[in-house]
Image 1 (cartoon, rainbow, N blue to C red):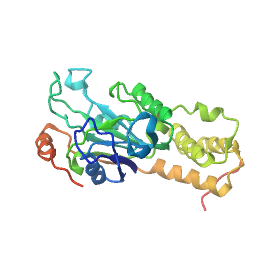
Image 2 (cartoon, rainbow, N blue to C red):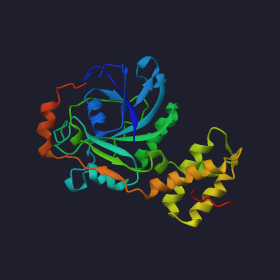
Image 3 (cartoon, rainbow, N blue to C red):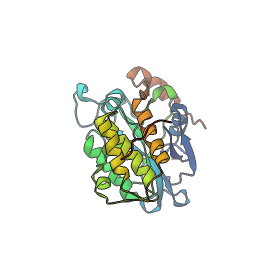
Length: 278
């Protein structure tokens, strides 16, 4: 799992709009270092954060504050969220108000879920994916669905983060496949990505079966021009490998006992053919 974040040179500055520092995130440590600063998931023209300046993003962040119920048994936790999406790549980090009072609400688990996605340069499409996630999972914040959202930085260690290596991205999980299936053709430039996404979906739906494989081959017939057989083989077995691989979840502390350590660090700024294996 990997994605990019863009950090500011400050913490807690709501008026700042400059996010000049691109961070490659591939480990919990990478993420913890980036989250120490105010940050955004989007790349913006001249590094100036605004909806009209949106250039691209390969990550979506969603908030959960547990502000819709006062019943602790109904509060969402990182493990609960990850269990709802066991196949999906995600990382969950505590927010600056985790297990602290916020407004009139009592201490409770609060945090951010970072979802890698297929990189997009379309701000409207990006916001629509966020809205789709929110529609599927109403415990996420209602208001955090625009393309120019930023997150306040807060100090933490890698051990404070739940890191889950799945085999699907959230956009592959929740977006309807009907649009792709309805196409008469899959044009050059979209064939590999479309077939990879289809392979992942059909394996999840039908498992490692001949039915799934035949559906994949039938879908491949829509590629124009056709993909070489070797490339189709590579796509299928890559999806199959990830499907069979147990996902890796690094379980981290996200608990009231952890809150004081987070508070102590908060002000510190660290830097028709059968594909066979060959």
